[in-house]
Amino acid sequence: MLRQILLLHSICPSTPNFFDAFWPNFFATMLGVLLGGLITLLINRLMIKWAAKSEKQIEISRFDTAMGILIDSLAFNQSKLGNLRKHLVTCEPFIIELDTHTWNLVKLDIMHHLHLPKLQIKIEFHYSKLALVARLRDIINEIYYNYPNQDSIGGPAIKVRTLNELIENKIIELNEEIDYFLEELQQKEIVNLRMGKNEN
Image (cartoon, rainbow, N blue to C red; front, side, top):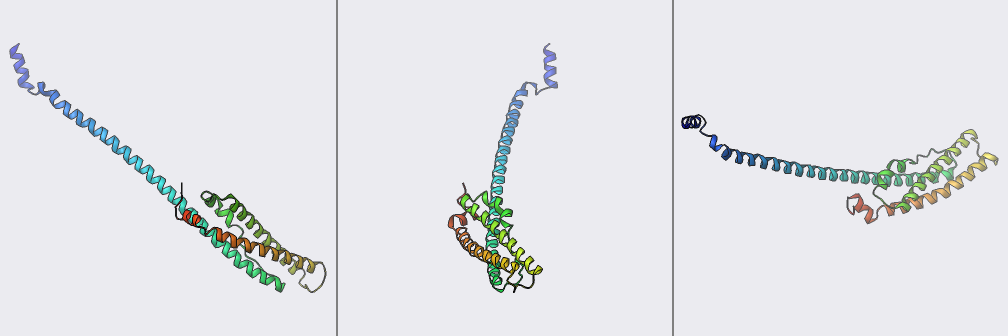
């Protein structure tokens, strides 16, 4: 029996030392798994934070771009309204190129950040009045083309004068609104929003 034990020991001399080699390897493996899991979790959190920050920057960039487009549109329309007012005096056909669609294109990007409902309602109504002025001018042009002789005191001439007076009153009103909007949109709080500041 002793001879068999000695023979087994000679064949597998490391058998008594199995656990001495097992435990260090086991703990090293577990430590690697834990560290790997923690590192993976940390990387995942950093990626989520980076993605949220990147999305925020994109939203701010879209807001800033939309605000720039709106301000440019207001300034453009103010210039065109000035030209239109000059042509009302001449009583000649004039194609007006007012921008009546910008607010509908940019308002979602603006309203997401700019929480000033009264101002937004005023801007919305302003653009609807611009569309009305453009339509009234189209009607006047149609009268000019259908009745080229506006020297008569008949119905067409009276309609043109009436519409011109209405448009002129609207132009004064619209210009005052544009001045107000441009001043409001240059307020410090709004400028800070465009730069990504004062965000909750």
